[in-house]
Amino acid sequence: MLTYEEAHNRAAEFGQGHLFQFWGQLNEAERGALLSDISEIDFPLMRRLIAHWVLSEPEPERFEHIAPVPVIPLNAPDSAEAWAAGEDALRAGRVGLFLVAGGQGTRLGFNGPKGAYPIGPLTGKSLFQYHAEKIRNLRRRYGCILPWYIMVSDANAEETSVYFEQHDFFGLGREHIRFLRQRMVPCVDLAGRFLLEAKDRLAMNPNGHGGCIPAMVESGVLEDARERGVDLLSYFQVDNWAVKVADPRFIGYHVLRGAEMSSKNHRKNSPREAVGVHCLCDGRYQVIEYSELDLYPQLLETDERGDVVYYAGNPAIHILSVDFVQQVYDHFEAFPWHRAFKKIPFVDESGALVKPDAPNGYKFETFVFDALQIIGHAPVAVEIQREGEYTPTKQFEGDNSVVAARRSMASLWSKWLEATGAKPPRQADGSSAIAIEISPAFALDEKEFVTNSLGHDWPIDTDLAIGAAGEIERAAPAAQTS
Ligand code: UTP
Image 1 (cartoon, rainbow, N blue to C red):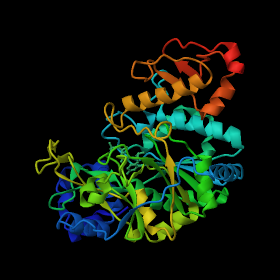
Image 2: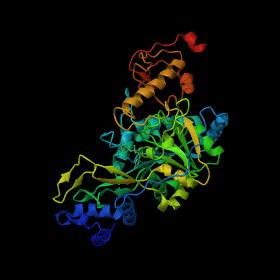
Image 3: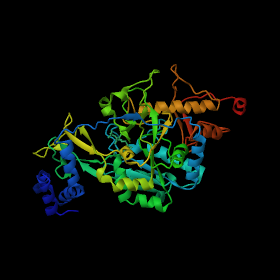
Image 4: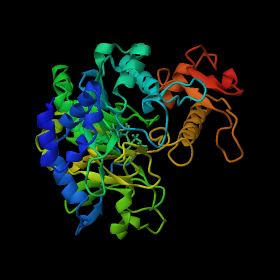
């Protein structure tokens, strides 16, 4: 940690001397907190970001030629081969799991880490627990460990590790779960001055999910993966309840094509859907953000059937090769940064806390999908169906919400129940009339569900392998065996 002299000089040198304006009013502990925040800052980087993003209005990047990215369709003829290759990689212990859970979860507004959100409508099981139950199932199937690396940040690190302790690491063994902390970045006002959120604390935000690249290398996680013989990382986001963790088909395509980074893609519902689009831009693969759609009118085109031409929406599900992460880290200086105009609470000159009701400053972040730009050869893009794979929970109600995610899972699980011959009640519009939960430890897909539920009574047992908030008419035994 920097001394007072060093921190003071450094801040003054970079035009941030105001950080010490309350120094005379701080006690020893508060002074320590301020020095600790300042010691974390990469001042040369911040100067670069402020000059580019705040003190000038940068021109958006223009591309001469944009093409839709080639996507492996759902029913590609080699999908069985990919599945088998993925299963081989899993059995050989080559796969680790990488979960990004360091975000602030501001839109959901839950009091605790987003992963602790009780997403299960019947059980109140958390997002973390759902992911853990998927891992339990995969371990059973493939006899592998699947070490689980979880990225957290100052916003939630302590609470997340306490949560895992309280739940005894979901029976997965603490030695196979490792937390790593991403770096924080100061928030700045419209003049490029760092904001204080208290007299002794800077307003900071985690450095975006792209921060997983330096975090993996600097925390020793990449080394740990190598020592365990893991060369493939299945990357997913904590708020995607449905995500297929370590999906054999996806891993298989990555392996068969010798890829460095692979992505899943879902079809966009409409040209203006609020999702990034995976494209080939002047020979470089990248995700064009939703906010930039209007810069590229072709991205809004539809074909004669009304389908979006640039349809490859980015649900943030990837496979990263361990060596590739190291390669991106070695060039991380050139990794792109993005800015977001936000409402940032701060203390004013008098030391009073101000909660602005309109955006008053910028947060800076990196995005993991920008690593696609660095790839030596074509990345692998694999199509998925949203239902059963992508239920982002950004807020409680509306698009990408808890309510929408529960509806989507009830719809999926109703189909699984129907595959056993049962008749779960449906509304007039076809959606499920009741809340349903099926533990992923019990079944990860319809086929496994049908096999495992033969001969079971359900709703069953305390673990709620299968639960429904209402009566479900069971199939007659003859129907089940036919
Ligand atoms: P989002 O960008 O949706 O952010 O993150 P969020 O924190 O969940 O929610 P808001 O925007 O504050 O409402 C998508 C995923 O990336 C992770 C999040 O934890 C989530 O799993 N993430 C995001 C990080 O791990 N670190 C970050 O700095 C940002």
